[in-house]
Length: 122
Image (cartoon, rainbow, N blue to C red; front, side):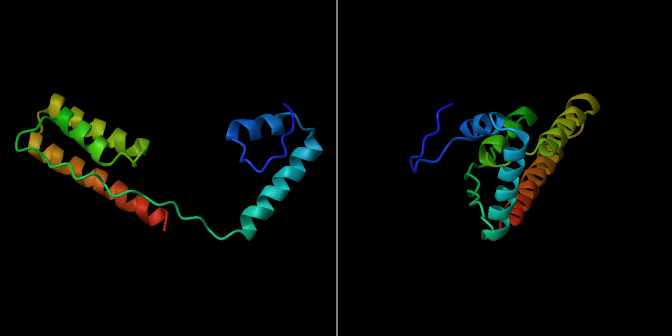
């Protein structure tokens, strides 16, 4: 990779390529410098978008609710949320849990995950 000294920001892939081309001593120096810059900088708070205003239909399937909630809370990427939603879906399909009860719990699950994401990024 050629070294480009322009002011343009490098992509993560470019930085990884540079890092991989370095010997261990330079890698340690780069890591030390990165730690120094991180410690010196003010914390960056990521702006979390507000959930989309998607109204819950009067009649909705559990699968439809998952699709709606994934669209509404597109910023929530937690595998634990999707795992819990999947478990609720299974409870409905296999154990016969009430559809409204399951969807209500999914709403709370996604809303709580969103609130947690906002708190983490303040």
